[in-house]
Image (tube, rainbow, N blue to C red; front, side, top):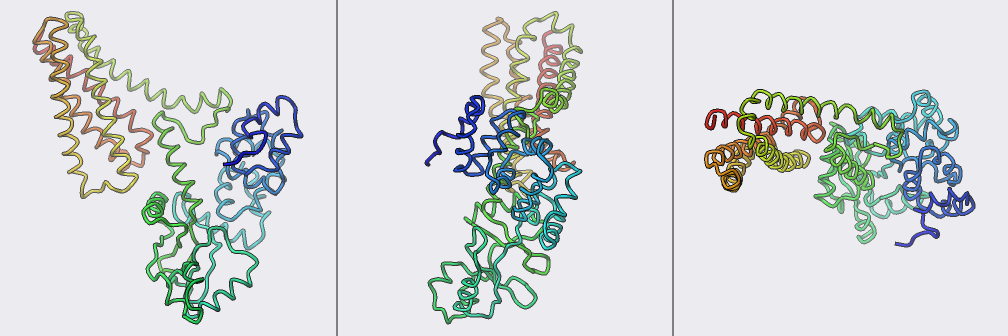
Length: 446
């Protein structure tokens, strides 16, 4: 892949050197996505300055490509009219993505800045949940009646000045605008022009209902190698289409969400956000972690006398808790992935629970033997080794069971398993690990 010269990642150095001519030249030839990446490398103070050198016809696309957190901060810094002018030229699905993140005073102005048809279409797209097929779709479909010939379709297309991006199919509809099939462009160009279009159409194409979830859409695009797909209502009337670029955004956002959620963070986190804002965003999960740590400490406190009599317990019990936590995390990760891909359902949930519990038992016995041997040789105490081994088995089995049950429970109560699952699992394995070690030691050794 060719890069502009100088490379766009040098934007920080160019601005520091006040080399505005090179910045302007760099942005003039750069793709909007690359300019957005460059803006995200800058501190909030320098972003408005760099913005002034972006070509006017690229500003809207740059805003669309920005990280959500960076867009929100930049939107507060820019001139109101300039921001609206940049947004209003975008496609309807792109405007719909940006509208919810605009400063509240600008919402009405942004909606009234577009023409009446666009405003009405925006209202339709915004009426669907953001994470649904309706929220993803664009209304720029190319449709023809299903009873005309391929020659007529070609003539119709030639009368258009341009086709929407990612047009790989033409949608065939009846008099009531119900979708009857899709006509791939390659068939349109290679088949006999006198044939009716419906003869060469895919009569049962992959399509989505407007309330289908975005993860179902992404999975279908991946499974069936789609470039675009229609969205229909309950009566099978064509509403719009979803294109591959929107699905790639969904996949990327989900990947970022999974990475950030594991640490209790949001994917729109701006790395250059002010210290106070970043601290505030992270405080909630730090507080949750403190509560869970205090719970584990409380369990230890109940056996303070046991620890005083046998100091080896304080040395060995973190190993049991850590092993249970790691084993549970492995199960938790697999289950959350299965839930997001739709491979886990009510029908196979019990089988998955049994399988993971058996894995916990097998791993528990393997590592129980190892830790028992180490503890017995280390402290010259066979009974201590047996206690630690039993606690290891109990915690690895509990970690596996919790790894299955926690994400399922969290999803039922509408809490994101990727965000809260790790904290809940750590609490369970810490408490069970400490309790099993100290409880068994109190009964057997003291």
